[in-house]
Image: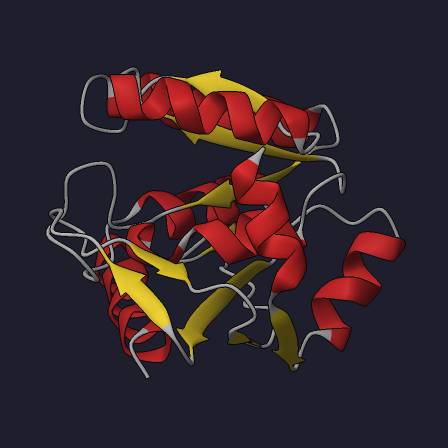
Length: 190
């Protein structure tokens, strides 16, 4: 597809990626979170690495599901918008089946770049590390969508910056968990 061709032309620089690479090589599942508007490159970089993805049931979602299937993702159609509990259970089920999970924590409808609870709760309930991935493009197109969706221009430089793995303790109170969500929001917006 044109998307794969475009992705092959960009120059990808990955910062602090050795920790997530090490976890994945050891077959340790992770929850990987990145903003909805920057999702193209993290999904491309982590193709064929036994990830599952939750994709909305919209028309846009169908296009995305198609690309992700070609990139080796286990695609689940659903939405945190409708039936958030079911969406979370599907992700947890995939982790039980030895899949890592990729999440856009501000999706499917925003507000953009504000962390919802899903990624942190999935990591907490499954006891797998949460890794945040920030994305920056040197040259890009920005769409006039709710998430200001970004696509790199051909041959652009792309930087993916990974957080250290975050372990979310299962015994935290609701308040403590909310604090972690706020911290993740700050990290991902740096």
